[in-house]
Length: 157
Ligand SMILES: Cc1cc2nc3c(=O)[nH]c(=O)nc-3n(C[C@H](O)[C@H](O)[C@H](O)COP(=O)(O)O)c2cc1C
Image (cartoon, rainbow, N blue to C red; front, side, top):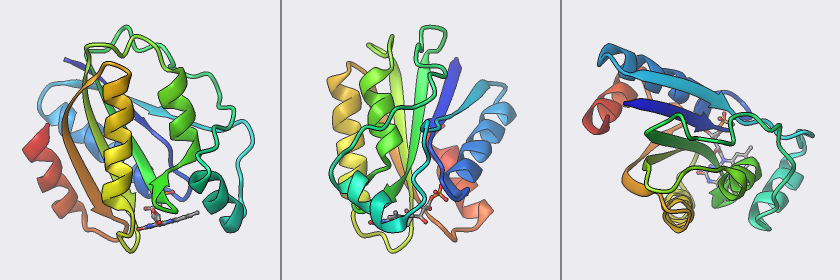
């Protein structure tokens, strides 16, 4: 099974989980391709990041790997920002193609945990609306140890 591991990461936590996913897939003899989504203009102000996430803004993103035709499965990851997915993830979910009928897993990384379930629910709903079949979801606290993360991933991958 070929898996696209698509994620946005501002400060590196979601990226680290993305890398771990690639490693776990590899240990099972599976191919995982990392796709780090980047907005054309990265917002650096915490307040504006929260505002944009809360308002479900969809910033322009670099047009990397929007077409998922070569993949059987998509694993989509976002940090929780103001109880929502990061804006770049909203853009990706709107603009990606060939996602219909594909298996999907979503994950979030978070700080306090406020809004993490809501964020996962919204990501699942959007993936389902786009025709993907969401089979699992998982969340990781920003300071969670590597072993704990790996255990969670091994249960669902
Ligand atoms: C703008 C912003 C808003 C955030 N809002 C939340 C939140 O609502 N709930 C929460 O649990 N964590 C929140 N966090 C913490 C991040 O979700 C957490 O640090 C995450 O792991 C960051 O991922 P990254 O390093 O991949 O960017 C927020 C962080 C930022 C920068």
